[in-house]
Image 1 (cartoon, rainbow, N blue to C red):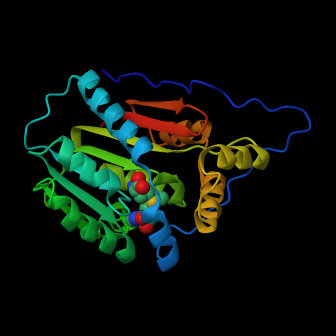
Image 2: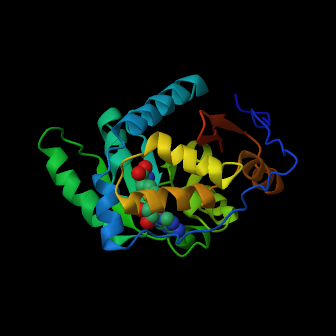
Length: 251
Ligand SMILES: C[S@@+](CC[C@H](N)C(=O)[O-])C[C@H]1O[C@@H](n2cnc3c(N)ncnc32)[C@H](O)[C@@H]1O
């Protein structure tokens, strides 16, 4: 069904006198102990739930016949908040979370033990790998994915092409992909407004990281440009609400 290249739903208009926010990278891996603790304690359940519902709709819309025992890969899974939701939603599937941060994965595994008390999550596992090892073929998975997802991950990756190479390396023909991330606002003032709106009373480290993430995020135009240049054929890039970007499609 995804045979055409969709342009973005809204273009960034440049207004006279407005200096657009340029992309400022942040460290790829989240390994500071305090940062990891604060992140994993923040309640993302509302946005996480919406992300998985949208993924579920997308899978239905794609008309792909997912086998009961499909393989889901969650790139940049962090503390496993999305990964465990995938395992609960598709309980017969194999769900693998990949992250390069040992600190994040320690928390993901601790949560797995806690969550297992209320739900079996039998197909869930985690792998510690930097996605660059997938991009360059240093590491490969025993089985290719039926569905690749990521949430709030892509803005960490310094070069979007590395993300695309990793995605290709773990995909086969017909693999569905669904990536949701922040998108970079036009100005830093808008970034501050978003922080006030969504994280008004968060821990100072979370506020710092949220602002850094907004500055590090890609715009929809940049994503479309990368995808076009790498001859990606079947995808959509969609601006969602005032802060997200969905990149969805089929390999
Ligand atoms: C903001 S967290 C998102 C965590 C989770 N996906 C969520 O929805 O909350 C980004 C995660 O991506 C990981 N990450 C960033 N760059 C990476 C890379 N090159 N390889 C593997 N993991 C990476 C970080 O360590 C961090 O755990």
